[in-house]
Length: 116
Image 1 (tube, rainbow, N blue to C red):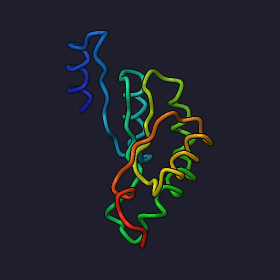
Image 2: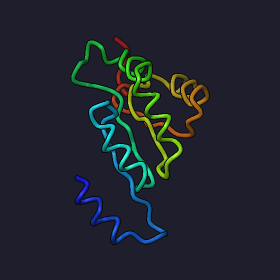
Image 3: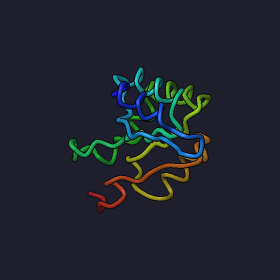
C-alpha cells in the first residue's frame, strides 16, 4: 500500500488533497503514522459490524484503549484525523468531539441501525 501511495504523492499538486480510510487498530499504527506524515486526511474506521452483538459498545472500547493515546499523538502531524463509526447518535459524536478536541467525525452503519 505504501508503494501505491508514494506514486500518488509524486503526482500530487499543492491544490489537491489526498486521504485514506484505515481500520483504527493497534496493528496498523505504523502505517497510520506513516500516512499522518504524508497525507492530508486519515479516516479511521472504529466500528466493527462483524461483532454485531457488541456493535453498540465498540466506540467506547476503541477509545478507552491505548489506541486513543497513540491517535492523539498523530494530531500534531500533517493529516487531519477523522474517526468514523461507533457513534450511535449525533449527541454521542458531539460529546466525543468536544471532549477530545476533534473537529470532525464520520458516521458508519451504527448510526443508521435501530438500537437493539
